[in-house]
Every structure is written in structure tokens, then in C-alpha cells.
Length: 508
Image 1: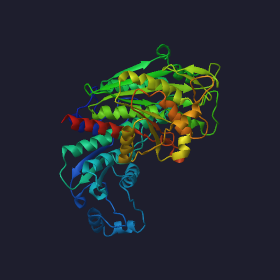
Image 2: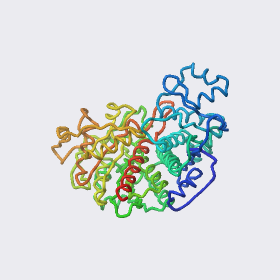
Image 3: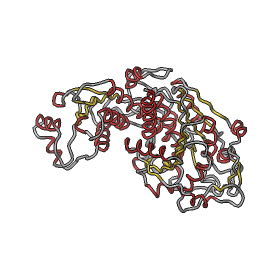
């Protein structure tokens, strides 16, 4: 599994400083399994007409007006670019244009490509912003899922596509621009890990595999990883999470990653739903498209991917990544509709539907997060089909108990194109979670299903600032392009980058 292939191997067991990041990230080969490799993306100063590469990408302004670089290329090419323009094949937005270039470069014959980045200028944004986001999109565009040899007997990606991409800018290449390019690639590598984990079949990527992936990350970047087994989870009182995985032959795991580079500051806690396969349990799902329930751990994959990106960037932050990993299966020991379980918080839950399982494992993870006295907690989950109905496959759902945190996440999503839309948490929705036999039920009925699921989680978050991202519609694609997307790694990475930048400004 790789983001690209055949790059120079540079391995390290220690977190990278900013200088080492710039030096080694474009060539770094991930040793965590699944393995990812980065296409080289870097910044160069020069003029497009004299730029010697296999493929050169230039921009066309909205309305068909050529940029200076495009005009020069058209002249040198004796009007060939004009002929392309007459087809009407134009991109009007920065990200759409760079995404189109990334797809073309990934399948084209050229190995060395250049992108005239100044042609894609977005008013109001710095060149560093352009470089970081272009680098991330171009590197992610080179992603290729390479199944492990245990599945198909061989490994190795396609031998076409650009191996090195230079971002051509008109001015001086500064340290900040080099760092921006390195950060963009780091985020793309985090996305690649998240996509790899999501794309693996459930018989390989089970809770134990998720735990091993987290441990490998810890070894590579030098941070502590704890993995609690079923007995330890029972001691902690995680009755809600354990109820989900009771019937599976795969043991439950509770994974905690401790990235500590922020001194005495309070940590950011990221929690990812890790249902490695969701059959629905006794409340069995319909058979159609059930194979896609291997993607039900994409929240957990996104947390692992974000932790990897943050560690690769060596950001000065304290970050805790929590993954409750279980498999939801039917069986003689399965939890039944009507059962009542006691969560780690002491609150009791009547389980009306065993397919509303993600909120059960998150409830105990949210309670566990209290011990870290966090600055904020963000959970990420493929939680409800109702969110797909509400927002489709374009936007993730966002709910929060704090206005400023919600606004930060919305801005991070808008800035990266990995957008989220806020849903309400009015008190009236709480009525739908009432139970005659427990403190609450795990199902609020069909009306406002995404919202009542978020309200359920909110009952376990009274001790801190909290936000919930429902990525049920954005975590993966179906059809011919079936596969995990790596979202919301860009949003979460941007959020952490912004938090560290704000902390640095406050300290200065």
C-alpha cells in the first residue's frame, strides 16, 4: 500500500525536527504496515517558458483568459494550448484545478512534472497556503492502494505517473515555502495511511491489526502507545464498548496513543470509531453493499492518519489519539435488542438496536478522555446513515457543545476543502432518547437520526469542550471509485496546525 513508489529510503525511529522534516520528508519511506511512500513535491523558482520537465501544468483564468505562463506556453507550442481551450475543459477553482492536475500526473507518462503555481492564485491567501494545499492534493492524487502480498501474492504499484513534482513560483524559495510543501506531503501521507487501513478487508484489518498499526507508529516516531485488552476494559467499566464486540472471535482493543511535544499544555484528544466490520449484530444489516461495512473503522483510521501527519511534522503539541476497536457480529453471545448495559460513566443504556453500535464504543472512549484534562475532545465516526441523507457525500456533519471549537473546525474545513456543516443540539431532541428501563436508549428513532446520535454522545462530554464529526457520507466512495477517502485527515491536521500556530503567537 503506497502513496507512490520507488523513492529513496530514509528511515528514522525519532520524531523529526522542522529542519529534518524538510530534508527527509520528500524521500521518506514509511515503515508502518501498511506502508506508504511519498511522491516528491518541492518548490522551485523560475519562469514557465524555460522550465524543463516532462509535463508542465499551467493555469487558465476563469472565462478562458490565459495566465502569463499559459500565454508563453501557447506561443512556444504554436497555439496548441488554444486548441485545448476551445474544448471548454477548464477548472474554475483552485482545488478543482489542482485535483485535475493531480489525476492527470498520476496516470500520465511523465516522471518529472512542474506546476506553475502562480497561475492558480486565490486572492486573500499567502503563497505558503497555496504551496501547502497544492502539495497535499498532488501527493494524495498519486495514492495507489497496493494490496498486501497475503491477498494477491504480489505487491507493487503501477509504473506510470510523476515521481517528482515541482511547484514553480515566480519569487524566492523561502524556508516557509519549503516547510509548507513538506507539511502538505505529510498530511497526504497521513491520508494514505487512513486510506490503506480503510481499504483493507475486515479479515485483515481487525482490532488487533489496528492495535499493531498504532504500535508501529509509536515505535517509528517515538511516542507511547497503550493497548488495553478485554479484561482491562472490563476493569475500567467499559460495559458499553464491550457489549458491541461480545459475539466476535476477534478480541476488543482499546488503543491510546500519547504524542507529547507540547510541554505543559493541555492535550487535544482525538477519538476515532473503530468498528472494523459492522454486520449490525443481531439487528442484522441488509446484505446489499454490506462489504462496505469494512469502512466503519474510517474514523479510527483518520485518527491514526492524523497522528501520523502531526508526528511527521513534529508539531509542538500534546495530542492523545484514542481508538476503541471492535468487530460487531451476530452470535450466541451477542448483545440483544432490549439489553441494558452500564457505561464507564455509570449511566445505563437500553440497547434498542444493535446496529446503533458506534455511539456505544464512543461513549466509553469519551468518558475515558476526561482523565487527560483536555483542551478539547473531537470524535470522528461513520456514525449514521441519517447524516448521509442530510448532507450527502460532500460534507461531514458537525455537532459541538462549544461555539469557538465548532467555528475553528468549520474554518479548518473551509480552508482545506474538507468541509463540515454544523447541526443543532437543541434540548428538544433529547426527548427522543428516553427509556423506561435505563437512563437512556441508544436509538432516537428515524427523525433527526444524526442529531439524536450526537445528542447521545453529548451526554458523556460534560467535563470538557467537545465536537463530533459524522463522516458517514465522506469517509469512502462507492461504485467504480470505491475506496476510502482519507477524510477528515486534512481538516483535523489543519485544526492542529492552527492551534499550534496560535499557541506560538501567544507565547511570543
